[in-house]
Image (cartoon, rainbow, N blue to C red; front, side, top):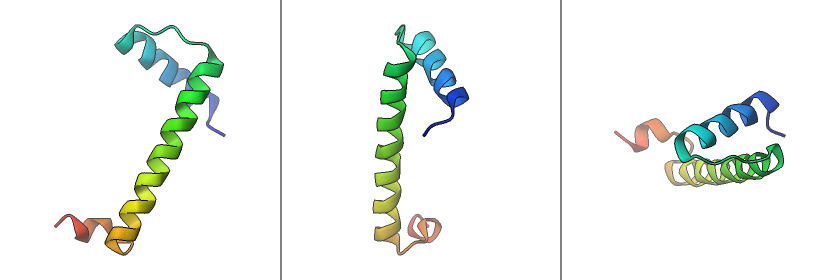
Amino acid sequence: MIDKNLLLELKQILKEDFDLELSLQEVTEIGTTLLAFTETLLKIESTNSGGNSYDAHR
């Protein structure tokens, strides 16, 4: 579950930057999707770098 304050912040960003007026339900869906995507990228990065992403980018 994503913190409600973070969802409200995302809602404000979407409104200001993209002129999107979305319901909290819609913002929750977007936030959940972004979180899942980020978690997937972190898992891939961790697998590819052996768990040490700092050394992989040096």
